[in-house]
Figure 1 (cartoon, one colour):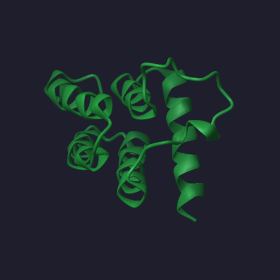
Figure 2: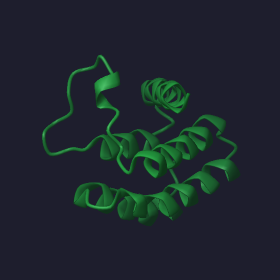
Figure 3: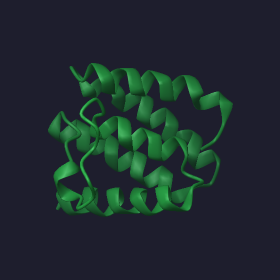
Length: 111
């Protein structure tokens, strides 16, 4: 997803995540990013963005950190901001592994 055209979308999504008030406003932005991932033929990112959107829609939050055994995020970073960083640099193999973990967690939570 390293594409200059989606830089503005990422910035908009990160701003929403930082404000943290109404994360449902991030859904249309995530869906636009999903369309770009779909056009780039990246099925993992396409799916994880859809699942993230559905998770926010169903829960009105993006709190999934408790499902990871990793070290906690810095205090000034939300789970959504971290997720967006992974998506923004989804070409990195380690980020792809974490995005796959997000996918699995979203699928478990949806059941």
